[in-house]
Length: 332
Ligand SMILES: CC(C)(COP(=O)(O)OP(=O)(O)OC[C@H]1O[C@@H](n2cnc3c(N)ncnc32)[C@H](O)[C@@H]1OP(=O)(O)O)[C@@H](O)C(=O)NCCC(=O)NCCS
Image (cartoon, helix red, strand yellow):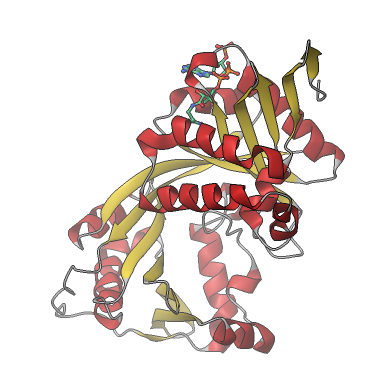
């Protein structure tokens, strides 16, 4: 059932979002439902949504250039007692153009007073039906591993967990570590070795387990940048440094650091196969931390929770675990 039913004057049930009318109420609902788990970034998004909700009819126009707004506008709400008490947001994942159209399901929320009545399930059913009819290839979502209720809902709908990931942060105030003795030689990856690095990543981050992480399918584009992509990266202030430990024609391990001018955040990606972890994880992290200008950047890293060795190494380098998330997927 996608259309809302009406009882007297009050609409009741599921309907599509009307962005200019609903954004304020959806923001209130999201705040109520997620506040126990919200970090500073999420709170800033809530403030931004609330400010946008006052833009009225202009919102439709703004949504053309804003993924979050467009996603909220493409979603569904459940209305009851004159209020919005349930929501699902649907926005396109940022994946390369030649990957099947993948939709992120987010902001799945039901007001606490209306829970366990099947509202989330019906909202999800309507959303998946709409995605299927629109020709989308897959739906993905992330859910905190300890959110048993939501996980069960998604499993019942046919989602499967691709991989569980820890999210790590290292505060900018933390000093760099001392240089390690006896570190293997670490150098910048030559552009010509992109395929070797891609093959390494295929072993560590196979596509069928979600690839490199959230909205990062394993794709050659992450490894082989065209001159145009280099130029757009440069113009948008994005820098990716790729440091490797090279063994002849092979790459034994790698660390990437992606920085965006003005963001204050650097993102690390560590690619080390299990048999090289003891030898390479600490030296690569040590090198990366000393190379980055730590006073100006906090560090962010997303890494598989099943990699126990790297988990301990990140803790040893003063990274703090923020969340543990199951990445789930449903092929439509
Ligand atoms: C998760 C949430 C959306 C579920 O909404 P809901 O309308 O209560 O869910 P439904 O009634 O449709 O439940 C469908 C199924 O999900 C599972 N489920 C939902 N909540 C559950 C809970 N608290 N404990 C155990 N299972 C639960 C059950 O399998 C349930 O089926 P059942 O009632 O037949 O046993 C709601 O609890 C919520 O808003 N939570 C806070 C926000 C959040 O965590 N969202 C998910 C982010 S990924």
